[in-house]
Image (tube, rainbow, N blue to C red; front, top):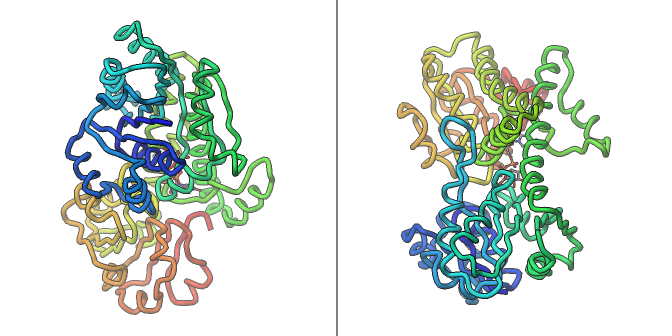
Length: 434
Ligand code: UGA
């Protein structure tokens, strides 16, 4: 099958390389010529484990190509995916659809023969139909269907998620479009992946509902964690007791500094807007957002309290800056909210992150000193704060950390370490909800 992927950003590149791995003939196009030149030279502009390798292998085999566009390659395609960014619009939380509609405009003149145009970007309900309206207005003669095929992959494990998904959701309006998409995903029949065909609006809403539900689980457990701190319960025991109930499930019940990243905050705000526009109450969604932003403040309060109520003139070493491990992504990372508050209150902050320091330096206060390893972070610190649970921080030489600090406070915002063991090592340890 011939596939054109419009947008060679995160979703487009991962999806394009994985479709090529399935055996399709894929061209990834982007209006950013510099990005295309870098990709053609074999340079993958984002950090995602395994992606370099996958791109190189499929490019070498000739199944994956890159071009500035969209242009003439659209004419030969069976399927054209729109995988451009849909950032939150400044001010109102709406998904900004300019890039999606611009992609449709650029695709239209090149359509030839029957083509399925598929939105892969996360877009509000009704967007695929609006894409169809615009394409039809530009090319009333063209033979095409639109479809929605939302993506559920996670940063850091995107390739595995794509190649071994829990399910595929296809929002389609014709049997012909469904057949074309099923053919593309045929290699997944081998591992018996459920492929669900629905209406277009249902597929679009499924994506938002999934992200909102997962975010709600996180906000819920963070609220329970606060209650555990007030009652002497241990949130991990509670989460395990809950999660073993098959109706609830164990995943996404890990407490912490709140969810971040390029998806949850943006998509949940967009879902709240979609509901507000239709005058449908979305109280749970709104509470999820409110609990998450309050969680940032609670983390600052936790650090303050651990240091005796005040961080002024305290030296704080921070381990991890990205919104989660295995990514260099700093978007909506809890560190962006917590660190400036500590610095404003007079703390001296040092930090380390295995992949995110370049990104972090661009968006955090200049006064932060970036260190080359976790031990340098801890040297003469009054407190160490574990902000992101990178594997590199799971097996630290804790005695070395303790002996090089000038204080003994260890604030573990991801509950990586066991409170009892940390206390017997001599730390004044504080986690979340235990
Ligand atoms: C999320 C979804 O998990 C994907 O299914 C979806 O495709 C993606 O958004 C998207 O819409 O593109 P991602 O943002 O990469 O993926 O990251 P997650 O692993 O879901 O983590 C999101 C945030 O929740 C992180 O800040 C993480 O630290 C936090 N989290 C996650 C918790 O605080 N507790 C948990 O138990 C799980």
